[in-house]
Image (cartoon, rainbow, N blue to C red; front, side, top):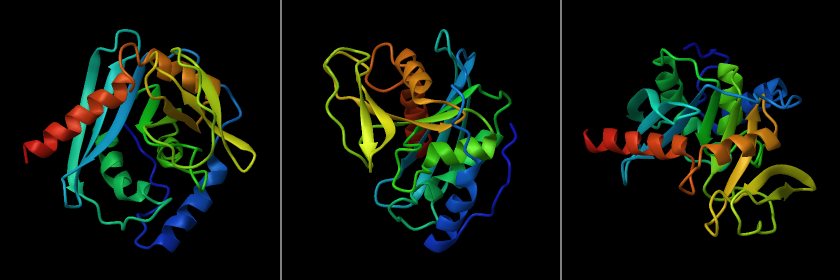
Length: 225
């Protein structure tokens, strides 16, 4: 699939912030996003303990059956420093390469991370959505920014994630009584639609199958190194 080369990879935090500032106005969050999808891609990155070695994985699933359609994995080394709010730049080069190797263009990208629920309102899901032009969302295991009230314990319960008076995401309970996940819009999708898709992708476990499959693929790739 095609990923637009809208910028070179920055080398400093100042350059990275400038990239985010330039791309943020390109976000499209006015429409509801895709009501129905046929294929969905999960994206995740695993790191070799104690090093900057990483494996970026993309797994494409049939949205109705959750059967795997295609997979792509790239092993590399993170060259950008660890800077809060700019973590995506450590993972983007390898994720973009993995996406470019796909022969199937998915209808939705589900990122292990955040979209608007980010201190600079431009997390990984936003960045990848703008680069690919595809609807995208983020599913975080932990909160990056914002405050919330715990949702009810039943599957499908939600509460708003709020930062500075702005709703930046939703806290979604994907299974009865389990810890919630943090869902935020990335590009070309709204929060209601994003939560609906995440819930559909999480029939049995806390994390959506997109994240679970991509995580397994990335870990296996590193172990085989």
